Amino acid sequence: MKLIAGLGNPGIDYAFTRHNMGWLCVDHIVNNKNLGTPQNKFHAEFWKENNLIFLKPLTFMNSSGISLSEAVNFYKIDLSDVLIIYDDMALPFGKLRLRASGSAGGHNGLISILGALGSIEVPRLRVGIGKAPGGMINYVLGHFNEDERKNLPDIVDNVEKAVNIWLDKDIQKAMTLVNASKN
Image (cartoon, rainbow, N blue to C red; front, top):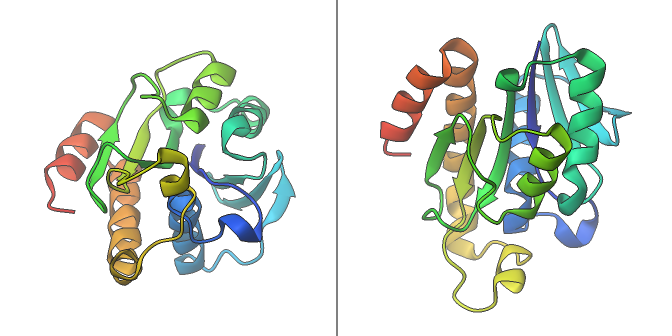
């Protein structure tokens, strides 16, 4: 069993904000897989296809660990079979970076997840949203500008390709392929 979780915040005010990049990516993948309407399970929108689970926590970003730990514990999923997709200001807009483990890098959603799961050994796919020109909170919770919106289809396609590589390869090979690409 593998679990792919996209991070974001619920509510219309947060739709299409940079901080909801993980949600946008999961939406794109489940739509392409024609998985239909999600169930409400584990404090999240939940889709299951065979041995693959997609999750969009509805607990707000800073409490994402509640949802992830419930799903991981219920299905007894190995942490190496969990992939977290989230926004990252440390990367240029649209750049992807796959990692097998590590610190949260100050990302509150990931801090919550790593704390709830009790480990930093959780694979993650960081999706660059670029550096904040002004205040960080206004930037991450701000809506995409026109240029960013134009690039979103390519970015979510690249994320889907990266997820498929992660599903098909061991983490080291997947990191080599994803991180070396010109995404």
